[in-house]
Length: 162
Image (cartoon, rainbow, N blue to C red):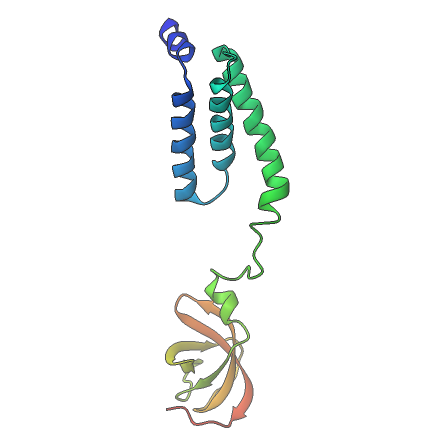
């Protein structure tokens, strides 16, 4: 216990700034903002040690804890909710992006399974409802199951897909 108190008693500005830098690097690797606030708190405590006042290690640890809590609460309220909100919440959800897209059957569906053209690629597809789809039928994507599109018929065979 005496060794730990000895280490804590010898904390300097450089220790706090090293902690802040390490937490900031970890934050950059995770991108969650969870480690941003303790990093800012550690940097602030380090700045406090740069002042002519010398704070006891107990005050430093208490300041770090209080600053981390205050910054995390304020950051969650003002930063995470406002700056980190996306206008495209489906950006990394492929199934949500594809829902509603119109596709064309490139061959007749057999037993509810077939292939469709989406953009410049051909995808495996399954009919989400009972029914049939012929080559050239216009279908709508309703979901994604692995690499297989879930589709439903929306129009007659009007275009011939190659």
